[in-house]
Amino acid sequence: MNLAESAVLARASGIEFTGDDRLVRRQMLDYLDALGLRRLVAASAPHEAAGVALAPEWSASFVADSDTTGLCRYLGLDTEASVIDLEREIVLAMLAAPRPLRFPGFAEFLSSVAIRRNIVHAARRTQLAFGTSHAERPETHWTYDEDRGFTVLPGQSLIEALRLATQPDANGGKLYAFSCYRATEYVILLGIAQELERVNPALLADLQRQWERKAIMSGRYHDVFLTEFGSMEEPLPARWYVPGDRVWFRNPDEASADASGYEGSWVIYLGNGLFANFWKRNDPYSFVRKCVEVWHWRHGTYVDAEGELRMDEDVVEARVKATMSAPIELARVLERMARPRDGRGVYAEGGCIDVSREFPRQVCPGTAGIVLPRD
Image (cartoon, rainbow, N blue to C red; front, side, top):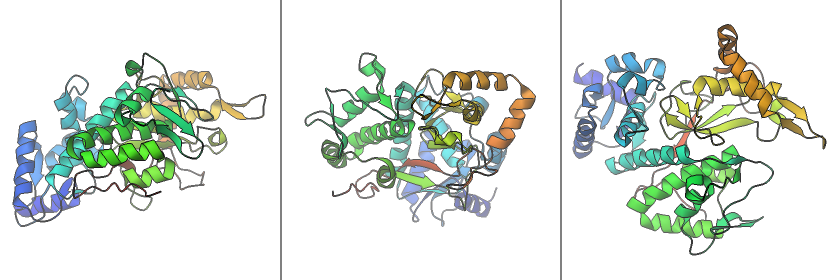
């Protein structure tokens, strides 16, 4: 590959640094050398913006159609036993991005990798009780107010409060009630806070004060903390995921989507083709199994004595098991569910796959993209 071809590749995909900075280019290549990944990468020409992406021959070998779910299998990575292997998978998946992932400097790139690593570690340790109508938190660290949500008690560490609320190994084994959406917020916030402790203590102090005053939740949380990559107009490939991504599997069945908590499923991509299962942490979902589970929600709904639409998880589990062991039926379900989702409010021929991924904004001093609200 000549330099011109490499430059085109860097502009079309992978990781890109804004501006022409020879130091950033050198730092990135040295970093890839240290991870043993340099041989897999094509770099931009010296006169172009610094950028790197997987070389075409390697993309064709183990990320065909931008499918990153098999990276560990192809390269023999053990991301549970090795932190370095997890870092390698994160970086390789980023290098396979279908459109450029842009960073203002090398420090922000390193923090992005570190936050993703933190998120994966936290998601693996998270186990919760499912609840959409009620919730609870450890009373030693949290208090609740209808207008402010769950806030951290003054003097208690936000990082420790998040751990205690989500990780039973840290709190004596108690499981606290969460929705899947709120669970992803806590896991991601923990990953961000841990990196802020290292690179931007001033912003962490602001975050601590924010959560002592008022929780940031739902749409506002998304706007403050997350970047949404991909859109209905420019959908991402169905199986391009980077460890640490927040991912939505949408329920394409209008009837069962009316059951509280079953409009869709918010998960964290753990890498190695697996998605976090916050209710059974030692039984993470594969891409296929998650699609099949969401499909069978339509078969698990019932109306309770109060007239509320509910979900019988035992029925869903039995249906999933049967479908997973029936190749023809499994292929039929996947043909439908692995399609991109329909637009908001539309229930037509779409599947459960979201067109975008979500991941944290930048955090370093001078380039941080997290701006906390004033109210």
